[in-house]
Length: 127
Image (cartoon, rainbow, N blue to C red):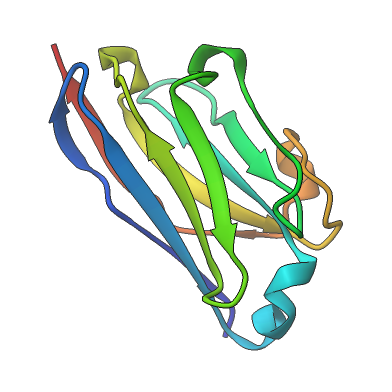
């Protein structure tokens, strides 16, 4: 069974920080280091949107403009974990956050390039 499980969400005041984690498990992730990983988010009534991505080795990352300088994506291949450090949070960052894994291995902002998705973790930022 292939699983991606996010954790670390919660309620935080504007200006605060959260660190999201995503743990991969299951047969397909025996070679976790071959997967690109991405973070996406979805607010109520809106489309799921790209947040940040990291390639298989961790050597290439990028993020959407609205979070650049505030969010950082990283990974630990030995632990099969990917992280999203979120600083200076704003109310508009409120959403369910999803991690995703893509066999293609290269960092990507496109949902269709990801093969596996987690169930999401809720982040709520109060003003």
